[in-house]
Length: 67
Image (tube, rainbow, N blue to C red):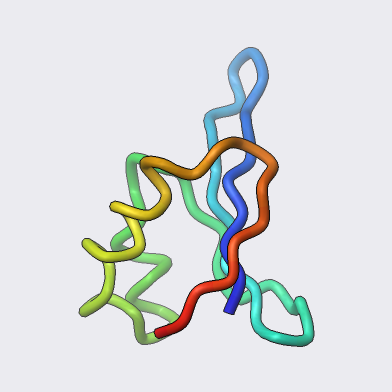
């Protein structure tokens, strides 16, 4: 699984994308509201782990997650 932090502009907030190994979009959520989206893909139990990684991740960088 891959994680990407996307910088918003003007009124569009910052977002996070979670993608599988084929780079298909699994989840797309705002940095301040990850719960609902992570719950949909079955990762609600790993929300704290994912958000701690996102906090330090630079915008635009792709990081491979091992869950």
